Length: 222
Image 1 (cartoon, rainbow, N blue to C red):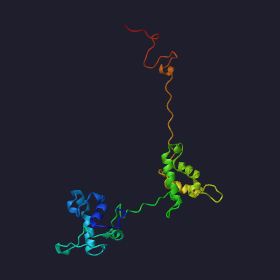
Image 2: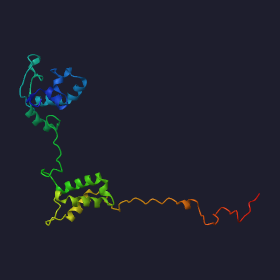
Image 3: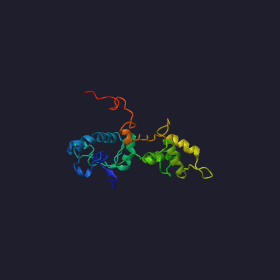
Image 4: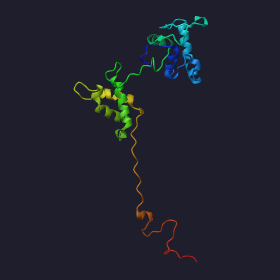
């Protein structure tokens, strides 16, 4: 359908709502399925109203030979260029005629809105959070700083002498740091050693264990 430059309002409504017009060969919406009728009702109403008040121009007008010579919407055509000019005036977006503009890619260095420090903060955050090894023995901020130093050239974070820009790296690390309150990195606690064989037997020095009596010190009562 993209090679067609003029369409009926029924084809337009179907395309806007994500339907394939080739599956709906009827000349009006009355013979479509109930779901398609409901989905396209608002768009069809808007198109007809725009044509009636001439805010949307018809590329080709066809009138009924009967019924008071009214417009035949199944034969009249709207040019795609006129449709695309009209849609933004009513705030209408769709995936076929007027898709919403994609957001700029922050990592694309040749983009009009490329911000090196913002790109560096996002890249560092993604890299450090995706690899637990980079956090081993380091706070998030220190891990971010280490990654940024290694990748300083990619994000214009070098001084004139070629050394990493420590001030810039620290600022970016603050932005990407998900634990700004600080604190030492958690370290695994050492396991308490299991009791040795002799310890498991208690005191074997010959001294009586508290709560028990030695058979040599007392006679066994009968």
